[in-house]
Image 1 (cartoon, rainbow, N blue to C red):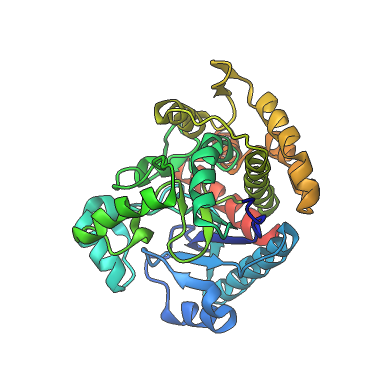
Image 2: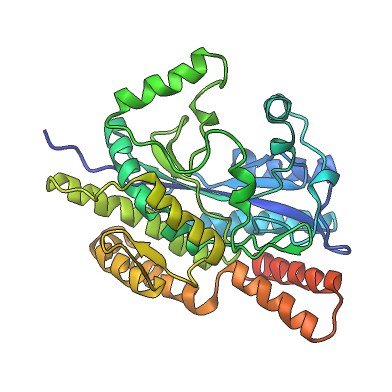
Length: 378
């Protein structure tokens, strides 16, 4: 029996860091009134995160990328406007250029306290932010099947999202340092491969029954079946500073899933490769973003990223038209032209040093660029 086509609805979560407009450092203990006002205006679409210097927003269920654009603009604008009243600004970035995790304060919440009690320093240093994209796929068996196939493209999506080149004042040499922090936790990284939802559930059940996790929401893979919604949730990407770049990546994510679904109903599927090979591309995306290419696993050789992107865009051309996001897919090329947030942060830093700034002054200029890109270019 042929499956009904999934709804391919969208929900996007973004995590921001709150910085002090004077010092450009993180606001270690923002006033309770700031979050209260955000909740008053955005209700369930805003929430605190593990660190008090973090804030998370989530769109409602959206029927199109265009609707996601409207919602993310509204959310970013509201957080920026409220934060400004308290001398703060949100920055859509996965790591702060110079803040130190040891100086941060944790949000008082039972779930977070339990997490740090179990994970210790690996949780206390989670001063990182990401962007999560939910795509509505009602059939659980289809979610598992598409999860295995979409895994191939996770490094390609990560490469275009990188926004974490700095950590505690150091140029790490990576475009996405965030994942080196997150990967210290268990149940992270690439998803396991299952033949069915019936196979996936008992594996999660072992951990739940053993008392190790409360539920599947504590499985933090780069891509997972959501524990709360009938969605497939992509979690590999850094939070994207430029909102238009973020929307292009949202469009790419949903178009890839629709492309894989179209193949399935023709009794075709994307080849599922070994995790060790996909992990190699994941590392290359973390290290270089798109600068040094990724492995085309079918060819067995490293290929220029622009060539790979062109191929992907051709694969999903039909899907972009059907989903009304052809413009956002075309705009993926802009990320290669403009540079990711990581590229631009490093460019600002390098230029400041060349102009005679001290290291701290240069990093402060990076924060200024992040504020402007997050708040003023909505």
